[in-house]
Image (cartoon, rainbow, N blue to C red; front, side):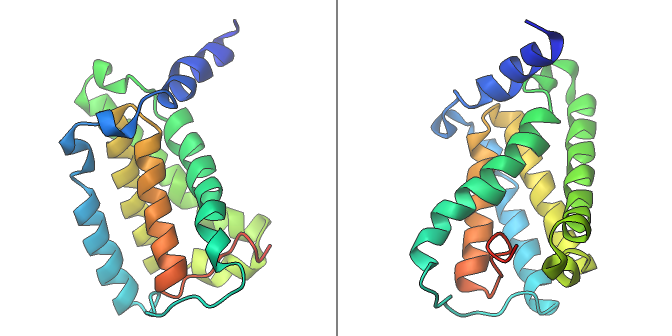
Amino acid sequence: MTKPARYFSDNLGQSFLVSPTKAPAKTWALVPVFVFIALSVGFSAGLFQPGWLDSPITPLLPFILFVFPSLLEEAFFRGVLIPRNILESGRIKAFWRVVISTLVFVAWHPLNALAFNPTAIPLFLDPWFLVIVAAMGLTCGHAYVLSRSIWVPVIIHWAAVTVWVLFLGGRNLVLEL
């Protein structure tokens, strides 16, 4: 097996096999901090507007949002960019891998908008939105490092985006492409 293939197999591949129910409680420790930051920033910056999304596709959105952005983004930004066993290299290396993964995750949003989704430019270039994205990236990175399961950050990401789109006025940017 080639080195890249082994890396994907040992990291991302193995992370799909670990149940989120096996994650230690401290894995979820940053979730309340993320929720506080997201709600505080989202409401004060006008990014969140309470209300139910009334659309014919509303029942399908949780499933769509599970695949993209949640599963695909977490597979790359956590499952590929952070080695699954990074804690064996020490907390400092794990910390920096989470920070680097988060910085790439934050940078991806404006690049995505500019390159592929011009309707997302106002949102994805909004500094307050990027603060929320950074908080999510750190939370998901922390959860991945401690759980070694890709499912934990996928669940966190999915829950946040689904609540935002269905209940807080978020746009389903995937279907606007």
